[in-house]
Image 1 (cartoon, helix red, strand yellow):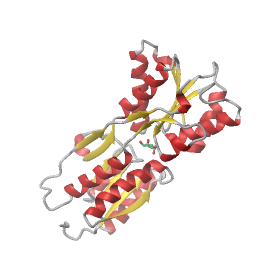
Image 2: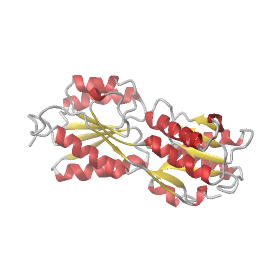
Image 3: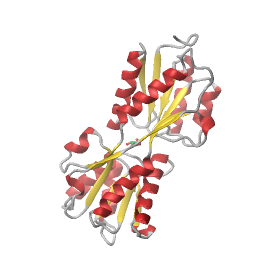
Image 4: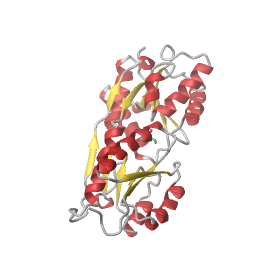
Length: 283
Ligand code: RIB
């Protein structure tokens, strides 16, 4: 059942195609699409709102069935353009600012940030460093908010959480953050990273400097990508149900763009993260 003239392709527009997290999201979306005889076209915004906007004309021209988008643009302008061009979409991995922005499937990143920080506090650490990506991304902000909430719960001051903001959410930014951690006084004993790629970069930089993990510094990542468990020191990480996110978002988009979809609903589906404890954080 296709809406008049819509192709059998769903576009998945991700923030960073090189991040294995999105491969897991894509796998889930592809499973759901295949069951409906649809295919998935993988597109990359490379964390650039301008590059994300460039895809609009392609999606309009190709009359894609719809778009699953993990937004690089946080102003809402690109999503407004999708709506203006009648391109159906479901936002993945971000809670939308307002209901009229459409449907979304995300993970409760505030709880996720709390899980990471509570775990480090339970190991006896009394201050943490949060290595973030760009804070205009809600997933980075919410993880920070959750970590601060855990400090409050433990009766610790908010400045017991120092923050290093990485330019991008990737391994290179993690290596830069690792170098900055080594220059901090007092030297941190516990670090929570906004995603596993940052954490793997931090691990690399600390190793290169002869700093041991978790001996000198306890480390926690986020996403629990395949490489987290396979890292030189198996990485403790807050697991996002990435496959389920992709599958749920594709099911929602297919439902919204099927014959039966009367009016455009504004469903928000929020999934829960879980902490997977491994060697990198047990002091
Ligand atoms: O792409 C950046 C990060 O945002 C991913 O690692 C995942 O955590 C997503 O929420």
